[in-house]
Length: 124
Image 1 (cartoon, rainbow, N blue to C red):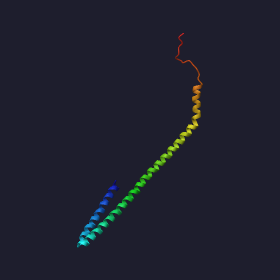
Image 2 (tube, rainbow, N blue to C red; image 1 turned 135 degrees about the vertical axis):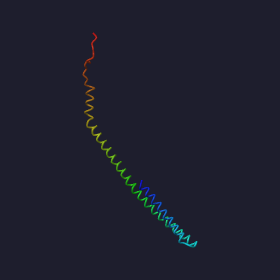
Image 3 (cartoon, helix red, strand yellow; image 1 turned 90 degrees about the horizontal axis):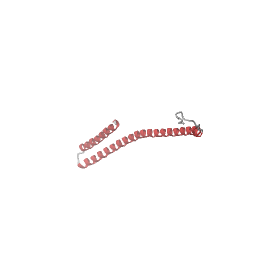
Image 4 (cartoon, rainbow, N blue to C red; image 1 turned 30 degrees about the vertical axis):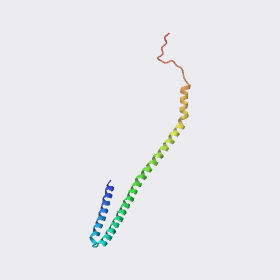
């Protein structure tokens, strides 16, 4: 946030310097044709300075942005890797315990021992 305000402040300073150059050019030239040439030259110099500053700030912004976005892509790769590891682990547990669980289930269903319930009363 502070870097943005600093950038804005620096841009405003560059624009002020450009305006100062224009004013200086107006003061230095006395004739109309010389005055026009100097104004045009000062304006071009100011525009070049503003463009250079803008390009510098954009380069800094892209650098910071790439650092931030790069770290985010690293996180997504790490999460993807952890997810695949967990899936492989779960598949391994499934394959390891599937047969014993099926045998327990089948034995509970097929090996029934008929008994009379303790709460059953004969009415005869």
